[in-house]
Figure (cartoon, rainbow, N blue to C red):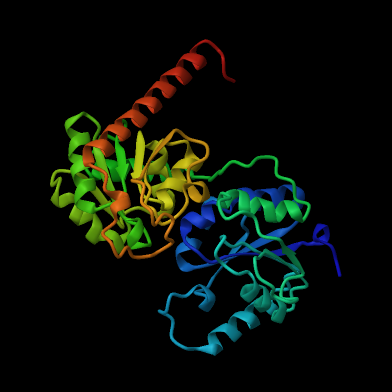
Length: 367
């Protein structure tokens, strides 16, 4: 069997949400740095595939809704899975990297890759899976950050990273589009603003929208214009937030993924739960106020490189790992004025940082 160093056509599997794909960046960058001639194809969910254009190490994307990631919404259709095996087998992959979180098994996608004739298959697992994987790492601690979990896999295969930082590539035209969107929403494209995002894929990770709207109203009163954001399916949460702050600017489903990244990059601060904007902000250098519910350990997903405040009330059920909270989200019982104060503090830190950068440039401190 060929070695990982000889791999030239690599399949990377990550079938979660867009934020999970963003956190895959450092691991894929490490593979490309060590194997510059290799081609990397990402197997992603429809939501995750949207983030792929911001990761320049990905050459192609296969979009698939996998039964092993399904929460009971897919119809019974074994033929769908055989079509995936057939598609993968026709692409000549010589290696597959199965990326997973602490709670997911790599053995099912590993077996799919086995059936597709992919000789090298690597993943990390707590349970025995026979020969579904050709390389199976012993499990990392549950509290390890997801970025580090991804890097741990590729490092075990000999791909040493030059950097462990999240990075995304936002095209210039996306910044121009973001300016148009800001102007269309009634905000100054050159002025500061706060991005407030009420949505999250799991209801148990959503700060109450009416409270987020109250925080938005407080920010506006204190001189930092808020911008409520969401994709189309998050419109109910955005509208619920606006009910508490009717004059607040909002963008729902109007921005492309790249334009949304540009909006996050330009923001003074991002206020959101444990969801995509938190990871984009971490990659783009924007401070974060994380309304961090008790569903997960902060160490698994928190920002690593930017100033941030994580707000959560201690509860005995933390971490519960639930999609829905049966007891009314006591972990997110955070007053709007506390949220607004944290956001203003983070925005002030960013403003001071920018002033410091301008001073350094003025005296020739940066090239």
